[in-house]
Image 1 (cartoon, rainbow, N blue to C red):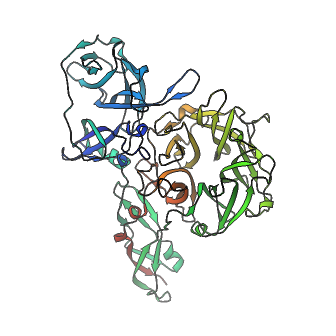
Image 2 (image 1 turned 90 degrees about the vertical axis):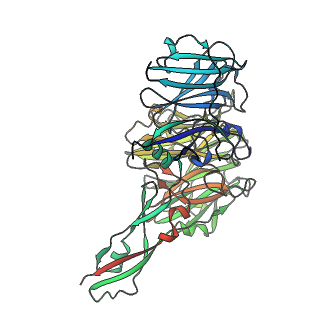
Image 3 (image 1 turned 180 degrees about the vertical axis):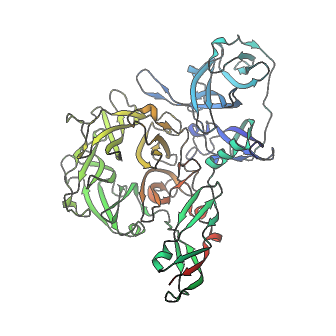
Length: 599
């Protein structure tokens, strides 16, 4: 089956719904696949997987770019290439790209490397492009159409190093074979043949799996109810991934005083959180501290003037728990406006809240940290110390030419790392970028290394209407560290991107981090949830990891908090859009077991 061939189609989309799918999103490369050569099925919720990078101007600001007319082709080494026409963000001609096309390479059609502009001619704008690798001559044949309607051809031994390229020469007109696809808004381009292995991985990575079967022992030997409750089921999903789930066993027919075999039933337990769990609460964070769970969030209901906290014995209990105000504008002279994005973190035996606040105007927003006093109650405002502004090692402010916000931490190998969003406003507004530094675990508001830039809002999904990447939060596994970030304006186009790095890497080396080309979660991911973003993560008593996020129940509705189980895909990367009905198939929710009661 590995050698079976399928077709993968690339396409762009028409920006039919600007409030949800604007030109910056529509003018990106999308993928679809077919098994019968006739009917194509979209991947990634009909959302883009390849975006053109923004161009950096001389003053360090970014100029957003888009792409049109992508053409997908096989490279000589078995990898993939993409040529596309770079445009301005709205799809209009890009003057900087005159006579050139964008070139990308990819090992798997999932992660792409933008090699930049490939110059074809000093002439006019290129309006269409195609490329094929000719095995007989071992050369790439590029054909294109310029804006005057003329067609040209050029041969290259190595499309990534065009120095040896022959001069362009006129050629006959070409047209791509028209394809009719039943995909909303699709502007089809070309299709290429790929092995089933490549196609299967695309499908597994770019579609949400469903629960298809369970794995459970046929018989277990136990001596008590406690041992029985420890028996769990392994849920198997359509992509081959798994999840361990607890079971509520009906042990009423078991006589624990009489050894023997009993046939019992059970129901797979699934915690269900109806969206929204909290209205007018954004940038949510849940943490476990001293055996209890706590919830904090930005309060959109009062114009971001207060921060309140909820406390409960379980995550589910937080849904109905009362809120207690622990911080408000005016409680401290240096915090008078914009109390944003609180996060709870336990560090070195102490509990801290990281938050952003302003002494006055928007331009004065800065990251702060406040510590719970020894033996203090997190629900008591008086038990929290005054918020301290984050500083560099020499005591100077973290940043003075703009704002800092959304600070978070991660701990690895005894070292504390701090990540945050930083927006330079003077002399030019550069947008919000993601930074990392090492922090002092004894005084988490103080950095002990220089800040390092990790990511800019260079892709269209992150600079839609505004140049913003913010809300970093770490999710760590044995092999990798994932940091989800949020991008674009906080509207229905807000979405979640991801940075990742090996757990053994130097976290302060930006070259060791990988940024995903396309967002992890968008308004297309879960019906009825618009502009999802600003995730945090929490683990419950069963070891299940939950994504805590905000989204809007309607395009014009307020930001609200939600909860969803984090699933891990075929590569062990987080998947945030596995809804409850796909996570647990109701037809598979009941299980049966032979229980051997031992004397």
